[in-house]
Image (cartoon, rainbow, N blue to C red):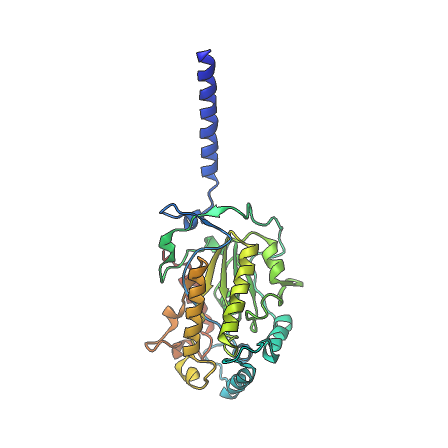
Length: 337
């Protein structure tokens, strides 16, 4: 009888060891980013991280090309017109509904003047996330200022969401196999309804998020919203983030700070100024901290000593020259955790 129980116990032990080895072998490369060294757990309907980045006004994106060259000569009259139209649509000190004509224009650009770059087919199989209710344990070491995650090799399984700056990254920065959902008029007010070209069809963000299981998602929005009431922008930003996390609960979220503009451009407008950009970026950083997301700020490589976009990197005052997007991508790839 003893021999029987001993044999049974030995068999059970061997099965348990085999199961443990098998589970250890399927850990994906990004699992370390979700491990908390202190052992505490959090429900991964949220995400992990910290860093910052920025984005610009509807009209600024329309008149200022993110793909400019050093020989481009653009007139300031178009910028002044952009500022004036933004001021008309702005409701900074009121609780009025901010989905006015300026946001309608943004929607029109999202529907028509849309441009998308995607190294991965966003219409791929809709397997979705595995066990969306699974719990992950983010490391407390990943939530310190200035830290940023290392993306997967060749940006495989990565999605970038943004405006003209994200388009510039895709066009000139070589995002490898990443998927990109962006256009020049993109904002938090139209990103959930905009359709972006992908091959022969136009897809909504909902369709893109449903198309595959993304490992990491970069979100860079805010510059086109500077003419709106800040509280309304922040409220809508949170709603967009909640929607993304709801559909991709296992994806590592990286919220990017908006890019600064040159001091010359900033001084010309009370709406599109670096002071407002800094305030918006601070709010985005708070959102990242509250939602356990990374927050990254690319301004550290493009700013001059005064905290504005270095004029040597731009000709329109709002976007970096095409050749500098490669430096931006290189910065994204540098692990800093």
